[in-house]
Length: 270
Image (tube, rainbow, N blue to C red; front, side, top):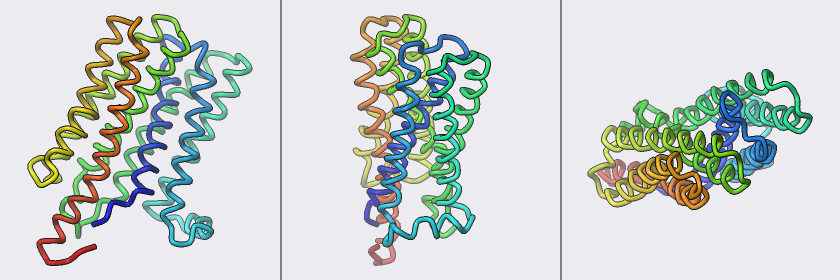
């Protein structure tokens, strides 16, 4: 089964954007990103928009996307709905930050953004679940989608926070979030690796190096290091972000590649 690159890029890019906004919002609860919050929110919206555009390019007739969205159904409609709501909430948050609005409202939006990031990135994986495809028909797939998106988004938060010279408390919080994102990607990625049959299959190198080492261990280790040495957070954030992107992309590619392995058993190519 050929890798659908438009869909891979859609979930990788928009997922990172959604989780970047989630992190900026969560920071409001403890150590707000005073210098970078507005830039993070705007970048999150841009990433979600770019990801959405990538998704549209997968359609044979992109100009008919509004027609597809006009018929509510699981899959593309739910993804688009959650993506749109998340982007709108991020824009409202950016406006409030720019106007230096009350911290209480920003905290509420931050919690909402966190919930939306979970729901959106989970839905991106759940839309592929189908009984006719055993390697996709497992809840481990959407959970892995969510975990790998969290790793890249939290690492991007760490990278921007350190690049814009946020307070030490904020940078250390970013390290904690990156550590959590890496742990999620690591655990949920391995769970899907065995549940989906890719951990010991023909794509074993892509799984263990791409998903596990780059996508999970790298953000996890960099996040831990950033909480102890905030002075090195910029380099650590860059490594974690690159690793998170690699892991996120690798997992999605594996999803399509295991389809090819399954269909080859029946002498069919897709």
